[in-house]
Image (cartoon, rainbow, N blue to C red; front, side, top):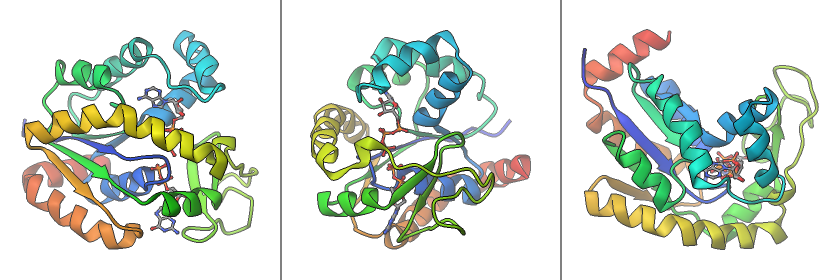
Length: 226
Ligand SMILES: Nc1ncnc2c1ncn2[C@@H]1O[C@H](COP(=O)(O)OP(=O)(O)OP(=O)(O)O)[C@@H](O)[C@H]1O
Ligand SMILES: Nc1nc2c(ncn2[C@H]2C[C@H](O)[C@@H](COP(=O)(O)OP(=O)(O)O)O2)c(=O)[nH]1
């Protein structure tokens, strides 16, 4: 069995994690696991962890580390035969330490995007809540405004995507993400990208992954996901 590839993508709300994760999953066959989507699935299926997580998310708080790791690490154990890309986890040092004790990461991508760009992007972000599909009226609009391309169900804008909520979320993100970034910088696996345009960042990320992911793994993953 060829060695598997383990990566994490980090960045503040609106930085393009979801957008870039989709492109990485499509182009390199890595399984994309978004902590936010995984929580929404647990909330939708009313699991014990989902019910508990909902009480925090509804207040705009992070889900406590022990709940998050207890939920996510078993999910990663189910993916031992896949190369994967984690999006939205780890967010805190405790989560990073829990992850590092259960597996060795190959690469961490950190997106460093200006506040004004984040504000602009999130003011145009529309989401199909049930699937987590993300649209942007300026970047990737739905075929019909306000309606999900696949289900035809209405799209919503998240309250905490509003500019007044973003500054607080950004400050909180920076506070909790900094020690995590420092850990991965010290491990020599952190790659930071700064730009206002995802399409300008993408070629650099794509060539980094092409260099880092051995071709036998990429080919095997693409074959297994088609
Ligand atoms: N690793 C995590 N640790 C704790 N809470 C989390 C984690 N990942 C997600 N959550 C909770 O789930 C919510 C939704 O997560 P999701 O990633 O979808 O959106 P977000 O982080 O709020 O914003 P964005 O996706 O724009 O970065 C978060 O606001 C947070 O409350
Ligand atoms: N205008 C513009 N919008 C972009 C760009 N990259 C991503 N977006 C959109 C897609 C989303 O609606 C929003 C945030 O992107 P996202 O992928 O949801 O970010 P994240 O919250 O997962 O980190 O901005 C980009 O380069 N330009």
